[in-house]
Image (cartoon, rainbow, N blue to C red):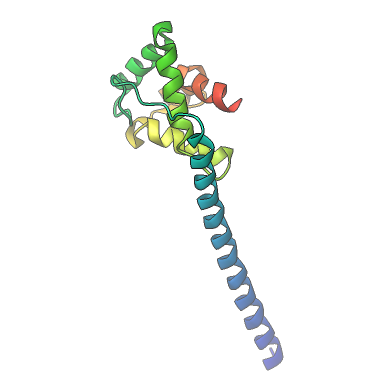
Length: 141
């Protein structure tokens, strides 16, 4: 290869590196902007409080079962609304990241590993859980 070709390739590589850095910075700014917007959007309405009987992250499948029962209890409707408002304030740069952040807040890593959408491999079926209904109601999933 000639010297001109090598210089051209080095310049291309440098430009690609700069563009990748810019992309990362834009993503970081986008996340910061979303977090700030979530705070201002929820500031107008009172942020819900977590019910005293619920503590996140849920650390065991027994806690998940108790939480599911709590969600299904009609007497907890108002508390559930407050909890949804609090969870919505967690924020994310887009819907995907918002849902990911909320689920990471609700479930510990250990518990999350034992849940999947379809219940494959003897895992808990998220598609039939009451927790899914909270997200679906708030975010139309």
